[in-house]
Length: 243
Image (cartoon, rainbow, N blue to C red; front, top):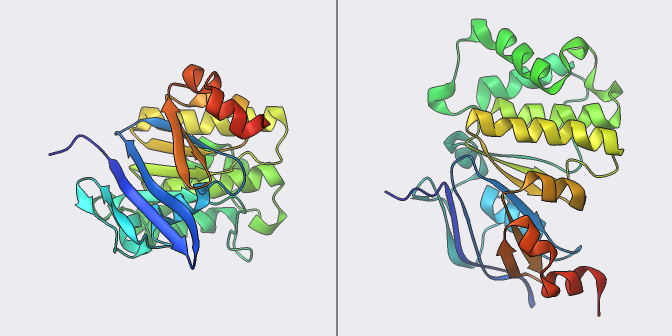
């Protein structure tokens, strides 16, 4: 059995005559922290959508825990332990912060991770305490600040008890101190055995967080390696800064 948690091999995705991804490979091991970077329009979101099931790739394969999930629906992938947070949080606005956690705990968690209904509230509060929202459990989610909304988005993904969490632009528009708060939350997931793919434009955070960084440009992976090597790669510098 492979020791890989996620194995993306030769993935290609087209929209009509436009090739958004071409022959992309990516692997993630249990507990690993991966940075996925690239200029706007490089294919990062398309790749994530293929991994999570929002889009289906025309070529290549996606395996999770050794299972081919390329045609699995999104909810099935979540139940296997593949969760994501979104760049634009969309909580249940008419619900409290606490109730926003109860929903994924009831319906999205991995089957063997499901807990008794009598313990749902305690588990939800535990996760909210982890992300620093314990004192806002009864607040309505629509009234949260931007950084607290991002924390709630991560908390809802964590409530699915993932093996792999894909964090999509969780730090966009935040202050340096707020970026550090989100970074600490994501780094703490390693102690829980959760692998993370971070898609981010805040390079300071990517370089501090990642054990390995993959770079997409125009739908192709042009580089992959440790953060220091990537930062000095001339092709990566050219992609971000031009000639």
